[in-house]
Amino acid sequence: MVCDNLTEELSKGLMNSQGVKRGVLDELMDGDIIVFQREDLHDDPSLELPSCRDYFRDLFYRVEELTG
Image (cartoon, rainbow, N blue to C red; front, side, top):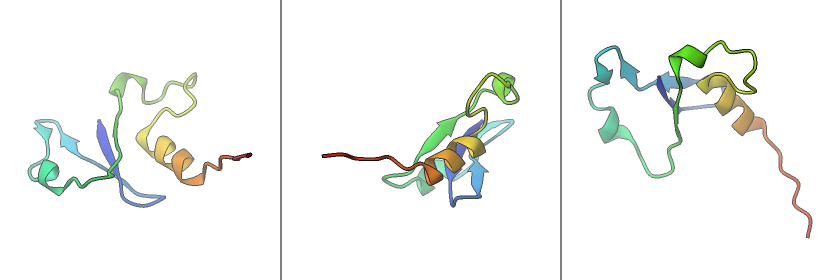
């Protein structure tokens, strides 16, 4: 599965069973984050972020502390 992030709660699949959806590559813009997800690992409990949605949710809420 290939996903693109739209908002905090919404990520959309960019592929279907035949491959990349029509027009998807034309819609991609600079700065888009595309995540590739292996279907066989989608529900693997040993992974910290097993799905595209989990990855984007983590990215949205992540806070990094910078010390200087």
